[in-house]
Image 1: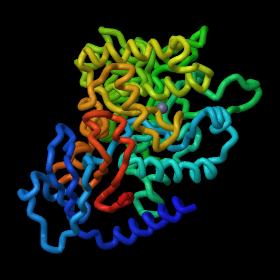
Image 2 (image 1 turned 135 degrees about the horizontal axis):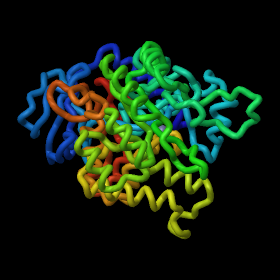
Image 3 (image 1 turned 30 degrees about the vertical axis):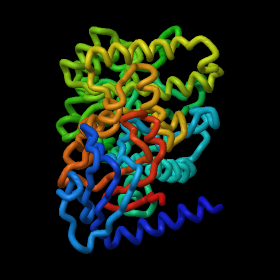
Image 4 (image 1 turned 120 degrees about the vertical axis):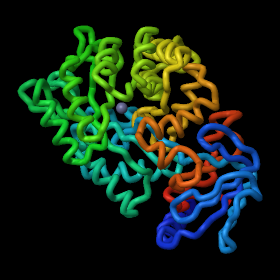
Length: 422
Ligand SMILES: [Zn+2]
């Protein structure tokens, strides 16, 4: 109860602050600017912008600036989640089919508002949401409500319904006499042109396509769209100033997605040396979604650390390691929703565990790399003059251990403080 009251107080404070944002000078122990760590730096925020960054004494704050002393903390750019599903929640509570088929869009939206708040309070001030999975364009509505200050949540970059080829996607396995609503919108051949434009018209910030799915004869991942279809989707998407994002696990689907012009590859369970080089050549950012694999296999009964790793876990480790060693650009996106919203840091911990990624590279992935992948590198993801005041602070030094990102002490989005622990 006490926790709820505190939270309410925080929220009331945020919205009143939003009206007249004061100038604040933040004094942590150190600042990660999106590239490197700086001991003894301070950050000045005026309105919703960062207007001063540097060593204490070098940043001149106006006389009326409110000084917020944050001893023992590290200040970072507001973290960016690269692959979320705010309209889903863990499958060990309710399986995906049930969420898609039996829960109304209204019910799912109510839950999503809580997921959005939990995400923001964990220091993630932006999410790229990769599809509502059957909740239509509710993501567009949630984004609007957050932007209007009706509910607290991160900045949202949304996919809307996402696109699948006919026959490939779920829910599956029901009597074929029934028309089953799918988790995404089917389109094939030249029809993809209309569907891409329709999704854009309804609010998609980018186009998300399932370039493969587990519809092989043995349930394995097989390509869904032809290269020509993907090229057509990419052409129409690009001409609107948007970009293409592909779910792709199999080698052939990744190859087609990259050649068609997809900017990011999601999952990528079967990357080999050849695909890694192709990703580099085409400037593709890879989102490994390690946490989804780790969580799903545990939901299926895998006793992590006690039992042999399932094949899917082994594949993911191999794939991520090849990508890391080849120097592929790797973003942070956990497919959160499969595991609890607000636990986003889990993905970063597993990127180190599965792929041996260095802590400094993890910090870059969740800030500057993701900002670039979202085409928002001039607004968010780094602490520089003129950037939006999206900031978070944690106790400790996350460059020593990435798990320190869980110790959230402060969250600011667009100059408004949402969390401030004494
Ligand atoms: Zn996903």
